[in-house]
Image (cartoon, rainbow, N blue to C red; front, side, top):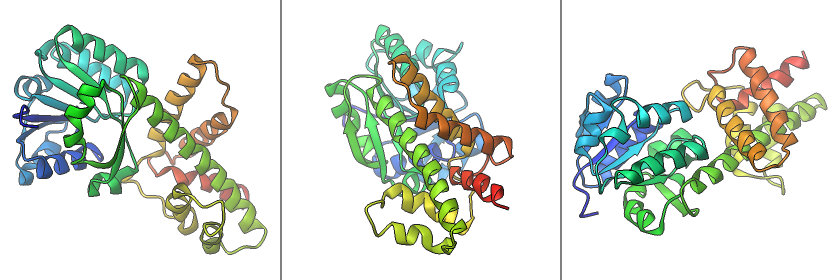
Length: 295
């Protein structure tokens, strides 16, 4: 950590803002932050995050730069844009992309940075907004062993489960599989809730009782709670983002020659929920599709 004098953070939204706050509070290093919405950077002034006016300003000032943006198009633009990261990077810097994106963009950015003498790691995060707030994220990392060891002390400011998955892109692979399993499970939970309630079980009891048996899981307890209450927040991971991530996973499945019909059913449910106007709500809202079918 002593070789890193200044940290940078690009993308200060629902997840990134909370992650940057923990990084600034716990790392003991000054942080410079940038978001296209300047108010999001200004909101971190209380933890002494200095607001930058551009990606280039972050690149010029930070020794290690963290990124957390919505997806692959944003990563590609901030990396390869006219005044983006790649053109402004210098030898010796480290870039850590914590976005859930694609394996291809991670490897493209890594190759471009390597030509400048800079290092890259993909380190997407799991467990959602509460874990970003509490600094208890699960982080899957794709990087060389040397880079992994260099960035781990800073990742520990934001997460508690830091897993080295192999080379660049492998962290993204495991994150996409994590999210694919979640969305498949959410779809299955919606079916189970619909069947149980139509068969006469009280809605509030379905997952409470199932969680005491072998069907129990973190996903059931976290996502099933929303189906039981009918409350689907609009300040957590929206269904539109869920569909984006699932399609990244399905694209990867196609590239490696694996048919994934269960994931395709989950994709269609997410798409139908978005078409119904629920895209801004948390993904357990897919239960409303089955709930409405029973009216």
